[in-house]
Length: 276
Image (cartoon, rainbow, N blue to C red):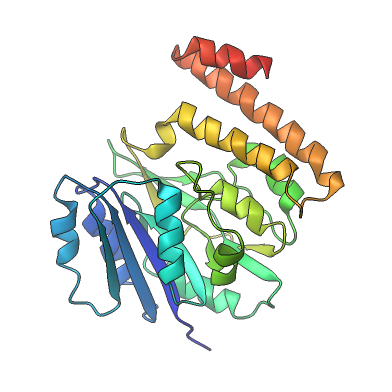
């Protein structure tokens, strides 16, 4: 079995409580041919000092930024510096199970070049308990652009589960006009050209706590809506996919508006989403 270089990028911003566990989960992988790119995006909570302790491992590359910039910018910077055949993403408050990369690489190496992503389910660890629960996700394989849109309510792709060919990230860089340029948006773009393979075993753990970026409902929704507009006009999107994008966009706005109403948050924003 071949052992190609794999680049794992760990994104850190003021997660000193979790950053060591995230790094350890990559350092201690059963698969060892790794390039570990740690991107600190201007942390002020002592995270940088904790990261420094790992620099004796020659596999570690530390991008130590003094200024906090959009995640999408940092992701593109890290991708440009990466050298691996495959790329994985990890956020500093989450972690990998220790055989995650080995299992995904072994599978990837049996697939032809039309496959760009190997993904699967993940686990959720809530901050007030040590119990792990299975996180829902889309169980799509093959050429699945329309299916990803139609099955969004299933949970989409777990954001840290996928291992993707580096070429995917080169051909479809993150949109630097939005704060969050990765995750769901990039995987949809990857699906325009590449097949996905769903491996039905949880290999990652996402922590749920009050500082999760996913709790920024308005900024995440605005970024998502911009992505849908971008997709409708994307040169690689076939005409038969347009109704899938439009239907999904409407569903997403309605679902988000209902969530905002239930939490009694920004009612004017919720009303605007309903009108859209």
